[in-house]
Image (cartoon, rainbow, N blue to C red; front, side):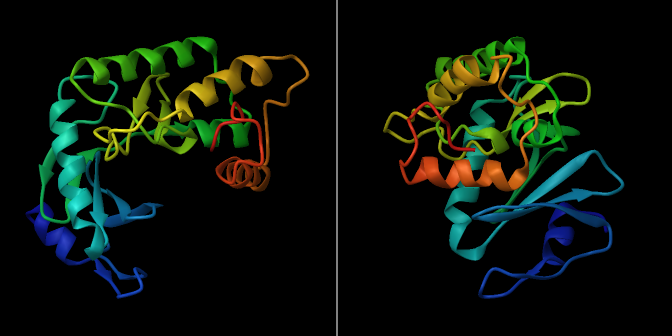
Length: 204
């Protein structure tokens, strides 16, 4: 297939937002609240295809990525459509996967993430919805952030501040386990969202 749009057209999503079919040249790599993400097998690119009722988010996220263009901590976008974004494929582990696999997250990573977010602020954005699944450490040790659709919302988001406090007050301590099972991390996420945990125990 010669165009990204042609690949997008092969993706069939039913009215319940279940994935029915897609082209063999695509590999499903992520499922979120509003979209499926595929890697194009022959290229180092990914396509994020939004569910029909979230097409407004597709435009918003594409517009924000355009504001972030040239900042190396965010993926470059190559094409956008009414329901999709084509961007760099990120080869690495999310912070969630780092913890569930026992890969150490260093204080240098935390400082670099802080810096990446400050660059977005400098461009008039308000980084929000920053959690463990939206931050990658690549196999080359680089920090990358994705899912920026909420970077223009008005309210102040405390998730990243809570995550940093949890890192410095818990994760860095010698007694704290550096590998935590996925099920336990998901439970922490649920309890944090329901406000059953202290605020510094960040949503995952």
